[in-house]
Picture (cartoon, rainbow, N blue to C red):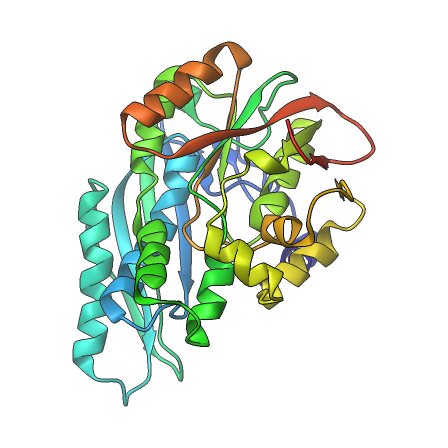
Length: 329
């Protein structure tokens, strides 16, 4: 579901007033946060979707990595997960078992456990997780804490939405397809573990709204403007090549429409590179806002830990646009 439709759906719902609810749907954050005690906050999120790859085990891994990511983006560690599953009666049960096994493999890698779930019969298979995690209340990260002067750091390259679209048309080589899967099945746990000691001011993960959509939410939530540098944004080279050929998923066009008037992209930036900035991601990386004096250390520690990361922009005082994209930094 596109961001425009989602915002309209939530408009008519009454505000929730509970002093223990630290983060709810009143903001555009990745998960809900509920204060259990002075020392503990519960983070809860849910995510599921239809297959993005043909291999059922890989699909389960990708869906789990995507759902788990929201907890890390909020500054917490996932601990408990519940399966969400739909599938048609005609689907071979071995396929369903492979989906569940893929999901469980990533939940285990995350240091969490699956304790059950819910399944229903449907015409199309869908899979995901409800995930719960914990953090200290003072360590919760939202998309509303970015400060002027912060450096914006992105983990994982962009382009998986374009690559998934190409894969459905048989346009990827075996190696290109595996690279796409590797990106989507890599957990954001490792980026989370590196960033937390460096006390970022804000964080979100990059998923269906694309980089620009999620940066816009962070900028609006923080009351700032995000300046991005197109040449610094990591992108899978094959995705750029495909974008140049006009292979763009429908979700990217939805994101473009929704962000019109909120984002300005310099005309000197090649079209294929700007298109990728709108590309909806599945299990994308973390976007981290960190004070400038700690940005270098963050990038160095990410590199030492084998986590790809790049400084892609800076936080500026609020302007007319929430996001301004320049050709280079």
